[in-house]
Image 1 (cartoon, rainbow, N blue to C red):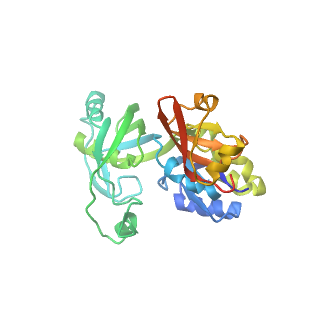
Image 2 (tube, rainbow, N blue to C red):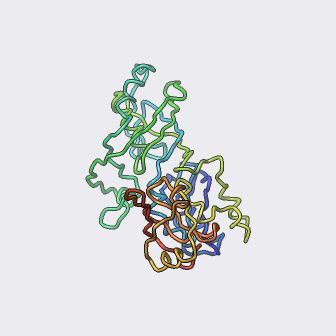
Image 3 (cartoon, rainbow, N blue to C red):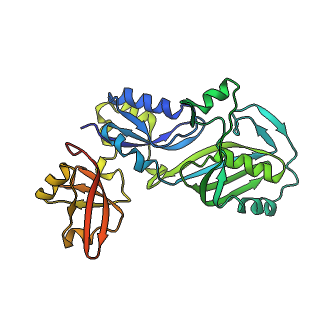
Length: 300
């Protein structure tokens, strides 16, 4: 079976769409997608779904992400990163570490953020970056995001190296630009590396070149579907329970099965190797029940 999750260490240069196209060519599988865009200049973890693992996208897209990056104070660009045209230069020499720490405090926790024009968000079915290329700017509503951690790694004007852990939908380039505006000198994002998507870390990622050169062995570089959501508990069903789930029905777990389930969703399997379904877990007193949200026929 050609159903796998590929944890790719994306190089700088290709877009996330480019990576998907290359994976299609390398694997011969048409059904390929990614679980969260990474900027062309950005490197690091890009989760690519191959085959029927694309049906897990809603769960994979919801993960928090971690990045390391560098912002340049004193230079504002029209794309909020180093690819853009310089709009303004201001002297950042008045910024010291204490002032920077104070400003960063306002960007930790739950914040509102306006997505950049150069983003994959769509307006009328057209990505904003396509409109931006045509010189068209549209109003964007601020959206809530969460910055769980934001720390300075090094401070050497005009460069600020940092690490950030944030919710899905957070634009790190926009955060850098907003920090610069609060400092009064402007800033843009100069470098970005995604080090984690949910449970998947860059240390376990595979180089895109390795996948392109693997031939039929690419399957060995991927994560099997049952391991695609390692933060969810796995429940092994009996034959009778499995038949009911494959028909779309829910089942009550016995005490032994229920004792191993602490998450609100669970992965269901019959043989311990193939993923049969992703299910909601409900508890009512001492009763634990699983009701399938997505069923894979046959299991993957």
